[in-house]
Length: 357
View (tube, rainbow, N blue to C red):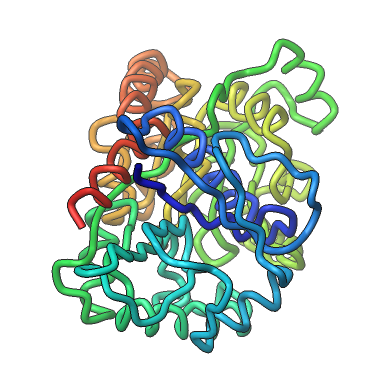
């Protein structure tokens, strides 16, 4: 019997909600697609002993909490973890010397975001230093490093000497992501008018999205704004000419609020071509919202022909199309493209990867 051991580092201490959700959905997918006589075990830091992890046949609880485990693993101290097939849906992994050939030990890590190398100013210094240190350990000890797109694989290959150890396995939208029955009430509670677009990006990249909102006579909702970014984003809106009352800066609303907000938008505008997996874009595709994205390899890989890729002033014309005569077609293309992504599909590729190793 083979056991795939999955690291759930954010089991009780969530620091990145999207990656925490991804790990949970992948765990369920791995259980649903497990080959004959294969089981799934969750490796979790110390915490709530009553916590339940859907998809895990067994749970291996570490003695230390997440912060202490992260510090220890950064130094290569992995006592108490054990060996076998270990899959980490992030860089948080017990990376140390092991014998894959004789002991069948293998360790695979995942990188959803390369901003620690390509745009470090968007992250905290602590996060940047930790990610860079863990990638160095992965170069030495990981049997494979998973990224979600081919563009990210190419960029990672330039950053680290991983050669043929880089593999591509995409993520997906949350299982069952759909517009809730009380969507109109949720939009009212969020302050949404009858006409608006949803945008993602940084203060430095959002100005074209705001200009497109003005041309479409629409408000702009900015999702995933980090703490303390509201003032800079508001300034970018003013620079574009969008009045303050028409700019709504949010963090990460809960899943039903996100679905309700996206479901009523004329389009999702992803203005930042960062080398990172765009979770909100997946969600927009899942409910058939037209997607307009800045030119970039990650966006091209994810969207293919399921949305519009634009540069500079192209956002304004693209939003006009999404809100007008091409609205229906772009919605259909988005929904069709969303079918390329599922957690069960990702899980099958994870099983295949470990079998290959």
